[in-house]
Image (tube, rainbow, N blue to C red; front, side, top):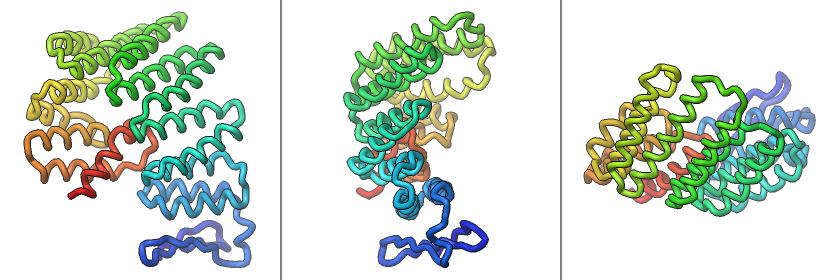
Amino acid sequence: MIIIDMQPVLRLAVVACAGVINVSLIGAAAQTVDPADLVKQARQLNDEGKQDAALALYRQALERSPDLVDAHLGAGAALDLKGEYQEARQHFEKAIQLAPEAGKNRALTNMGISYAFEGNAKNASTFYRQVFDRQMAAGELADAAGTANALARIYLECRDLDNAFKWYQTGYETSRREPKLPGDQVDLWDLRWAHAQARIAARKGNAREARKQMAIVKTILDKGTNPDQQIQYAYLAGYVDLYLKDYRGAIAELEKADQTDPFILSLIAQAYEKTHDAARAREYYTKVLASNAHTPNNAFARPMARKKVAGG
């Protein structure tokens, strides 16, 4: 039994029984619990990987406040993490309808991510393009550039390389429309554009172009204007090696990259599979499942990891 303190006069008991988690509110004050408090507790449970318990709280919050956008978004995210995509999208659709103007882009983006969990770039793009168009109309060029890159990434990982190139280019060109872009930001967007082109070239099996773009990335990083991006080079080198079929090289590089990123962990797992090291591959797929973020990185990694771990 997990006891979660909600208020001094109220406790929430989450009881696991026969594989099903039942949630009951204890005490006469149960009906007075603020739905926002339930959402806060649900988020914590989701972060801990307890999606069923989180969903029970999100549903209680929605019983009290059916139009609570954060509860719909949270429930949708937890359902995506469980692989229950259709039900997740019902919540995201409701969130899109209910969200105030300032929160609309967040709800639309979450719906796009939901489709990324299924590898459905076509439907994901419907929502990302809405966000991009809204940001462009509002003159939010930096945000629009980031959205274009996020959509490009979904196309890339769904193996639609032409649309990936198109949207990475759109992101780059949009960033350059920002008036008086600081020098470090110019370098950052040059880096992102070369980084993207290297990955696309690797997916096409074009080693020469991939290495050329990698050299551009390295030159920009060596300028020192974006020190926080240094770790991205190991990821790039490993990604390129993986898709150019240098699997041991990929492992060596990717193990120097961000080990909290589920996508990078999934790439390492795939590389170990290619070297016929099933035990190490499973180890990394299991690590992927420790991430409970509702992000594109996890959308690309978690469904595969779940299948691999379940399949033994």
